[in-house]
Length: 185
Image (cartoon, rainbow, N blue to C red; front, side, top):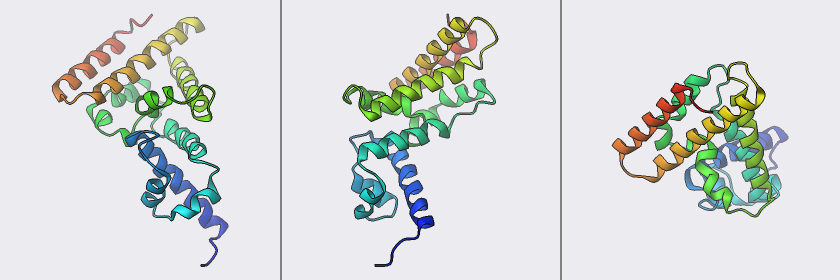
């Protein structure tokens, strides 16, 4: 079998991380196997360990990719409206990994690489959101960011768990109204 060039190996690795990011968000950390990921990437299972030390190492990289895919720092309001949409609820594979993976990550061992990376992602998003609030005391902006993130992630996670589109939309609208009111602490 011919050896894969370094350039092709890099492209293959990027493809595996991209596919894993979508599959983990769609099916959860334990709902997808290495074989599933590699098959979805169009690669053989045997090539996995030449690229990654473990499934957990891949999950860390996939989380980093997913955490940055949909963030639009230029307009916080537009990003939040997209976040609190039925399209986002219905398509976890292409959405926020916090809403998709919070439950799975909470079951990982304390201090695990996945849990540590998830914590970093939460902290980064809190800081990103806080930076977009009007000037004021840093503590108040951080409090608003914590509340905003909790509303966003909690609403989407809960809406995904129910099979009732009218109730989902009602929840999303209530969250949008709460965030629009600006009365977040």
